[in-house]
Image (cartoon, rainbow over all chains, first blue to last red; front, top):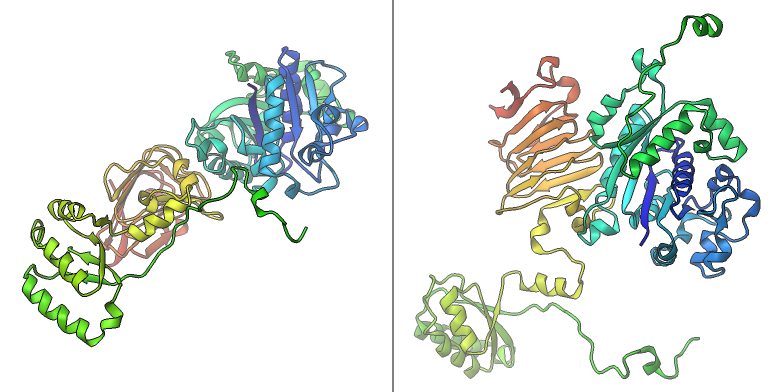
Length: 269
Length: 266
């Protein structure tokens, strides 16, 4: 049985797809058989971030409509044998995701995988609710600003009411908070909410804090999940996050501004 | 394909012999006001004489709710005989006590609960929530009483009281009908609490809280950490902007004094 993880947020542009790519790659690198599904039908991006956009033949909606089987649609990652990508359809809309169809695909995937990552679209409409409906765990991606925090809060409410686990009165979805685009300098100057501020509002298990980093954009453009960039702070923070998700006790990093030495201050201004 | 030549093909379990469905009916009810069977017989006789066809083969329900507990159990067989004698088909009782219901069952009459018709409907839809879900946590845009009831895991130990132990998130609505609402977690901004009685919040209250929803002027709101967007007692409300700074973030009680909303430090 695979564990189904939804990456969700409510708000757009906070880093759901980046996180989905990083988490799936991180789990796969640790030997877990992982598949990452793009639920953003009509606005697919995950294939770009994963760098497999030129190998898409069939997609998630084709499998739901039984126009293709799973093996035809799954794209194996070239960097890691344990990782598969199931891309979204770009020519359809979210209504193509039927509950029965999604359930069938997930049931089939659960046979041969350890983790299924569902990259949710923004919003609280059909696509997002489909992505979360069958989830066991939810990672709520939040930026340290008030509108993102409120949207995440709303999402948490929906998670606890409109999921299969909630409807069947099973053990509720495990919810984790991931703060992304965190800038300790701006927190220090009071321009940005701190980890504690966000935690006070959302009171969730903090899975990680990903610092704002130029590496994220360049990794996205290159089609390489940023977790593979071990030099960057974002890559390292994502690695910590994966370890933490798997139960390791890893201290949080990048919460405070780096202490700059005299020379670097002199040269970087 | 417009017409299916063999409708039996539709049914995987072979030929269909019956369907189980639920329907509701409007039935005449005879409400007994006293157990003097002679008086009943005399009045009933007069009524039936006026419209004999109306009562012929009419199913009727006997309402015992006006009789004191235990009274009338002995008269029930007589009454049933009387009704049958006038051509009616007594088939059930309602509102009876234990003894009366036992007597009805001995006569092979159905014991109907007051909410019988509603329950009957519920039985046809498996997912309809049980009656106690009148207390429900609603998702504002798409009310799903059953699903969202678990959202904040309300526990109703006795009628008129509701306890929620998980955070109430933005967009969630909680309504404790007919009683108090207690919350031991945070209430986020954009969440809405409603109760016919008092509201108690032991985490930070950042959403809206409306007590005394059905007009109870005595209802109060108690909270440990007031950061609410709006508080209201029986329709008398105050928005966040009009809550003095010194009352924010501290334990307070909110109540009506001569129809004026007052917020007082605890």
